[in-house]
Image (cartoon, rainbow, N blue to C red; front, side):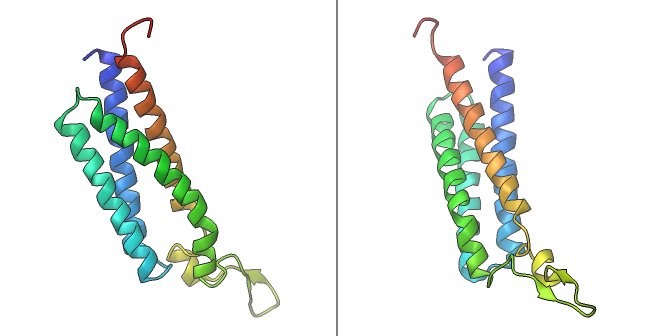
Length: 146
């Protein structure tokens, strides 16, 4: 394995591991109910399977291809989940009136992950980067001219 391919592979493993950790964080931190927490836990397990496959067989193409497909599929799924999770949280972007007439997000929902989707956006970015690294890694393995 060349140095460039090794760096691509290492970056891919780190992105997928980061995605697994972020999914686990969203599953435990929740704020969106038990159903969504179970979905996030299942996604974390899928990420762990990809990490294990990538680390067990660093020279194989199949785990890289699996990681690429899963990363792009999960990124798309997360983009579709954002409005669904906002609805499940009772309108996470609704504002509550406070004393003095000011508007502000519910601090309990915000601290539980229901007030903003920064963790979800982080996961989407990690998954898109992982998909790009996997595609580049697969391309670097091809013989010249194909």
